[in-house]
Length: 204
Image (cartoon, rainbow, N blue to C red; front, side, top):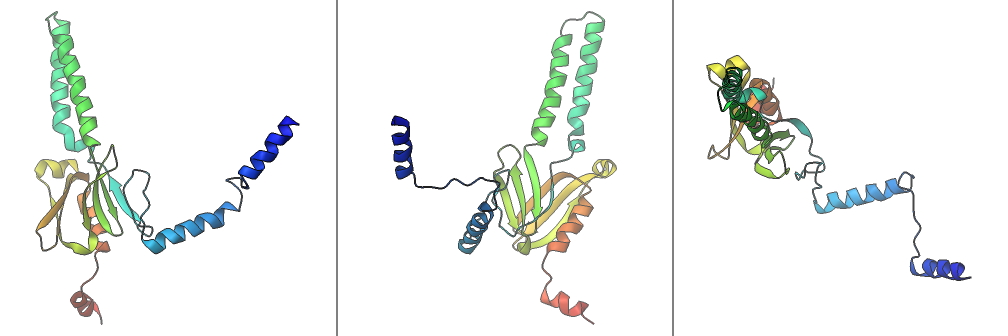
């Protein structure tokens, strides 16, 4: 009797019907919520916490290339080689040099993931790779100029910096150390809206 009374009381207090999350009854509800969000202009967060519009597509995303930190690898290699020699010939300080070499490699890994670059159908975004928070954002429609900056060593390594100027070239956003910057530039150029003058000149 006590059990039956408790069940009846629970049913009076909680008059809800629990629906399995995999059932078809959930789908219309999700579509309705998504539609309402779109109506009021709310932008849901993606997996990394960056605010994106519902109809915004990610075209390209990347971290700086490992080759961008080749100088850290060089110093790490030199420190490791010196530590190995010290240990081989019984000189004090060898383990410390090896520890320093390992710390340099760890530093390269940490710094590489500090910034993450995204190009969407609407914006160019630089986020923190660990928190997902936006560091710098620029609208594709406001882009004035896109250039690639790379020296001889960067060209040999196949990396470069994509320099994007917005709003009358007063604001600059740089994507540093990315692989194949010319290809990324072509993708971004394809997203830019064509000016009326360009459209008229290209029409037959």
